[in-house]
Amino acid sequence: MRWVGAGFLFCSVFGCGILLAGQEKERTRQCEAFLNFFEYIKNQIHYFLAPTKQIYRDYRDEVLSKTGFLDCLSQEGDGVYQNRWEEAFAACRDRIMLSREQAQIVLAFGSCIGKSNEEMQMNSFEYYIKAMTKETEKQRSVCAKNVKLYQTLGLTVGAMAALLFL
Amino acid sequence: MVSTSVQAAVSGKNRPLSHILRYLPARFADTVREYVRSNPAHEDWISELRFRAGGLFSVTVAGQNVCRFPERFVYCSAEDVAQTLSLLCEDSVHTYGETMKEGYLFLDGGYRVGLCGHARCDDDRLKSVYGITSLSIRIPHGVFGIAGPVLPLICEDGAIRPTLFYAPPGIGKTTLLRDVAASLRERRIALIDTRGELYQEEAMNCTLIDVLYGYPRAKGIEIATRTLAAEAVICDEIGTAEESAAILTAQNSGVPLIASAHAENETMLFERPNIRLLRDAGIFRYYIGLRRKGWEKRFSFHVFDAWQNRSFDLSSEEPS
Image (cartoon, rainbow over all chains, first blue to last red; front, side, top):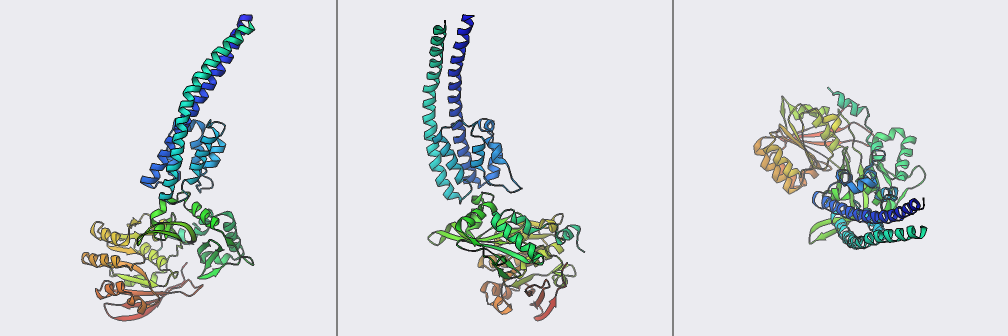
C-alpha cells in the first residue's frame, strides 16, 4: 500500500512539472500565433485595405481558435460591426496564457486597428510587431529553459517526496 | 409605370434614416429619434445629419438647420466625431482612405458622408487627412416619379437626348438623375456612380443598368462609351477640365450623356469655363434648371433647348 502511495505521489508531482512545462509551451505557441496574426492584419491592411471584419473572418489559426478569440472578434451586434478586440481578449483571458507584458502589447495593437488611415496604422503596427517579436524571442528562450526546469524539478521533487513517504 | 420594387422604395419599406441611426453614437441617434417622434412629418425631409468637433450637432430639414432639440442644443466633441466616423466605417477607416482624401466616403445603401479635418500635404498634393473635425451624413431619398415632365424630352421617339441638369446643392439633382435612370431601366444605361449615391438597389436591380462603382467620372465615361456599348451614360456633378475633355472625346462615339452640375442659374452655369466648352461643342441638347421651394415636393424645370435655341418652363406633379 505504501508503494502505491509513493507511486501516486511521484506521479502527481511529476505530472505537475509536465503540466507547467506544457503551459509554458502553450504560452510560446500563443505568442507566435499572435505575432503571425499581427503580420496578417498588417499585410491585409497595407496591400488590400481590407475591412477589419473581413480580416478577422478570413483568418484561420488553430491556436487562436482554441482560445475562442477569433470567434469573439467576428461577432456582429445589431447588424453593425465594431472592432471588439479588447472585449474579445477579456472574454477569452482565462484561455489566453500570455504574460502581463505580452497581453499589454496585444491589447495596444488591437486598439490601433481600423481607427486611422493606412499610413498611421502601419507606423503603430511596426512598433507593436517589433515589441511582440522581442517578447516572443524572450518567451522562446524562457520556454526552453523552463520546460527543462519544470520537468527536472517534477522528476526530482516527485522522487524525493516518494522516498520520504516510503 | 412604376415597378413593384420602385413602389416598395416609394412606400418607405426601406427607411434610410432609421438605418443610418444604428451607426451613430446612442446620444445622437436618440436625439434624432426624439425629434422625428415629435415631428413625424419631418422624417422624409431630413436630408443631412451634421457633426462638428467642438460645435453643435445639427439636422438639415428641408434645407433648414435644426440644432435645438426641442429646447436644448446637442454639443459634439472631437471624440464624438471620431467615434461616429469609426462606427460609420465599421472600424475600417483605412478602407476609405482614398475617398477621404477627396473629402467624402460612401457607405452601403447610398449614404454619402462629407468630411473634413487636418490635411497632410506633400508639396501641393494632399497625402492624407487625419483628425476629422466635421462630418455631414447625406440621407439618400428614393423619390420616384419626379422626372415625369422631362422624360418625354430626354427620351424622344426612342432616342435619348443628351441632357444636363443644374441646380444649387441640396435641391435634388441626384434624386432626379436616379429617377431618370430608373425610368430608362429597359435601355442599356451605364451609370457612373463615383460616390455611391446614384445606384439604388430597390429601384435598379433586375434592369439593364450597368453600374461603374467608384470610377472617376472621366475614366467611367471613357469605359462606358468604349467598352460597354451603352445607349446612354448617366453621371452626377460634372465640371472639371478632365471630365469635360473625356466628354468631348466620347461625343464622337454618339453615346448621349445625362449629367448634372452645380449652378444657381443658367447664366452662372455657362460662366463655368468647362461647361461653356461643352455648350460650344454642342454636347447637350437640353440644359434643365431645377427649382424646388422648401417643403414642396414638386420640382419646376427651366428648360433650355440648345439645338433649337428656345427656353420654356415645366413643372412636376406631386410625387407619391
